[in-house]
Image (cartoon, rainbow, N blue to C red; front, top):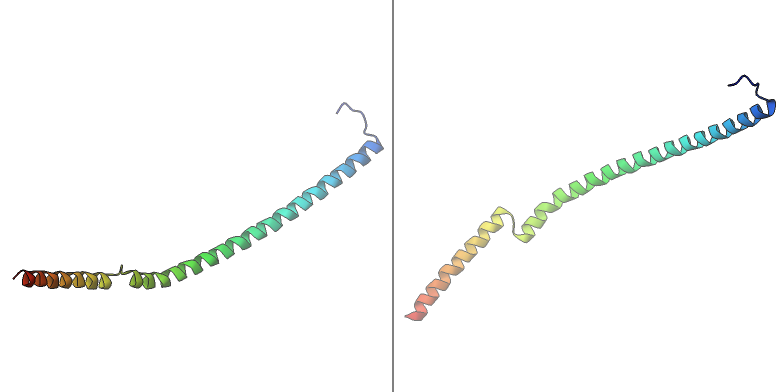
Length: 98
């Protein structure tokens, strides 16, 4: 700012350059909004899928437990069967020895 006036050509090129920068900034802002919208949509889709997985998991867990024998009733029945088998095998062993 030495006091030299700006020529009309310099001002014109500066104006064109600023216009180009403003267009680029507008495009970048548009892309940013688009990406933010995509991110928001993906995030909500992920949350829906996570809720669906949690729901399926909560319905599947009792079925898995009943098939694998990890629920309490099955454990009790399994222990009772082993106890009865132990008693029967002990009785058989006792009678075989006599």
